[in-house]
Length: 85
Image 1 (cartoon, rainbow, N blue to C red):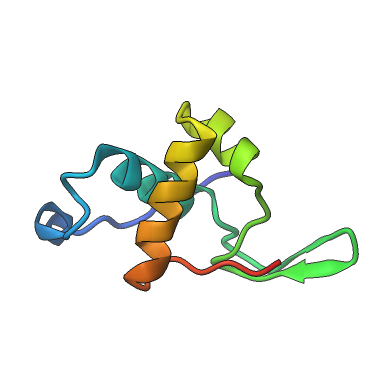
Image 2: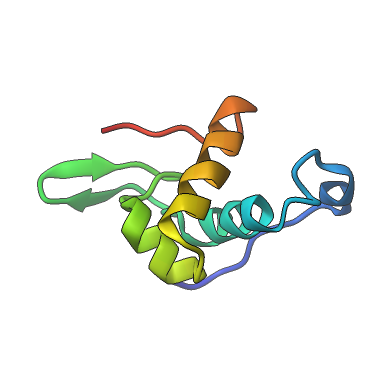
């Protein structure tokens, strides 16, 4: 992937900033989502989305699967992330 993302300093006051696992997962997702629509196995994965499993995210972030599941639950509960099966 190429390009960059903007990260506002306001993230310092974000409610999950002090939760290391949630912060790591959130920033990782920001950096790894599609920047354009792409086809994956006949499915359109839109800009701002990505395909991943808990295991894949755990491997990429060096967190445990349990930590990824908890961090993703935090992000979903507060509307920063969503998932689709």
